[in-house]
Length: 186
Image (cartoon, rainbow, N blue to C red):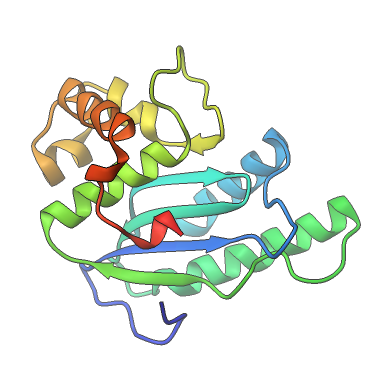
């Protein structure tokens, strides 16, 4: 996958992701997750960037976004990742790289590919089958997708009820061979 070379097209859907540098965990505790998510919320405020679904796990992050505004999503995320790297190095008194590479992204076209990526992202955190709102391997918006009766995104993108989406995630988590090979599997 080429990194940070093509331009993001308005109204296009993109998978933005990155992995930790060798031997590093990006998120060691809830404070790290909350710092990243807080900075993300601040960064996208007023940007018209549409977050479709996302997950943060200890050694990587994945976001499905729709580029809506004038400021390219890769600029927003590169700035966010620079802030997180500074926070991380200061907090853990580390030197060197936090992320393996620059921000990675790929354009996602077609409803089937969008659905496959959402399923991959939600399965990545191991949220399936877990009670309450806890996650086993990170944070994601999975619970919003399966608990919110009026989630406009799920309804607009796939015309699925929360129950139908939950069942799809469960089915694909039990049978991962059904999922298409995507960059999230790396």
